[in-house]
Image (cartoon, rainbow, N blue to C red; front, side, top):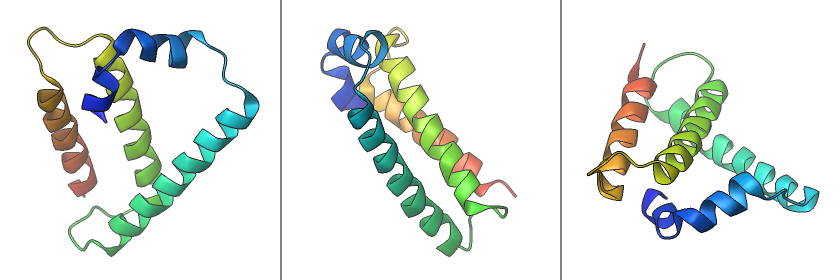
Length: 101
């Protein structure tokens, strides 16, 4: 996702920060997010190495974190960091969070 968003960061900024999305598209994006949360929650619930607690809440936080960091770091990338660097660090962050007990 980082690499995909990095292709045209200016267009990305216009589409996701400066343009008001139609309600139907916003609803579609929210439904997709809900599906991703359910998939992630199922994965967390099935993983004996995953942290305890409510897997749906953890999944919602993971999905929101990935989305926020991807958008933020694509629009304002750290100097010298490649999309692969960003993806690796986001993965490390999420991996550490999901393993916390």
